[in-house]
Image 1 (spheres, rainbow, N blue to C red):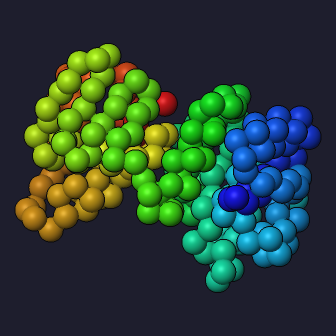
Image 2 (cartoon, rainbow, N blue to C red):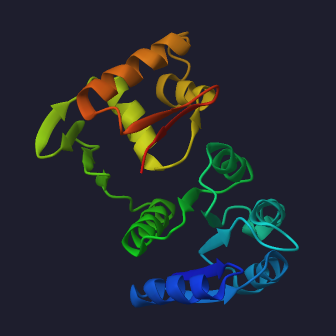
Image 3 (tube, rainbow, N blue to C red):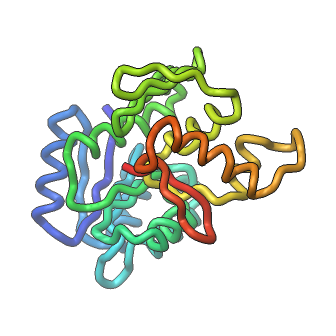
Length: 221
């Protein structure tokens, strides 16, 4: 049974999220501030920490930084849970070391799905197929399905989509995209990324991939 530490200063959120995660078989520990979260994390060594961003005394960003500086917790999975959906807030969260970011108001099924997906990736048992926002990708066959329609993508387009869909809501910078998709194969510029993004949008629709001006792209949830 995976252990989850849930941190939020709103008691109704703690109760609501804890109930939905416990119903799925997770062991849930709760607290309402960052300082206590750090103490509990060191004591309980959870598999995953779900961390609110806006909290008194020590906010989620600072708490995440502190957790990442503790040797035995530096690789612990962390998901931010926040009412702040602004792109810069998400970028700050990922820069602090978060593995995922879920915006409030909370949709229980989406949160449980994200929790299970991120725990699968850690255990090395990630699914060969993943589905988000009605788009399903088959990593073995390099196929993409949307609205029961099958798409066969060129290798780089598929790898770019697979990267973006691996963490819905996360903003991937152009540097990370270049390194992850093209690596050291060839020297490519921003225009190459833009062209591939445009082709993905032509096939899947403009609503699936959002441009974060001056930063990069993200898969829209």
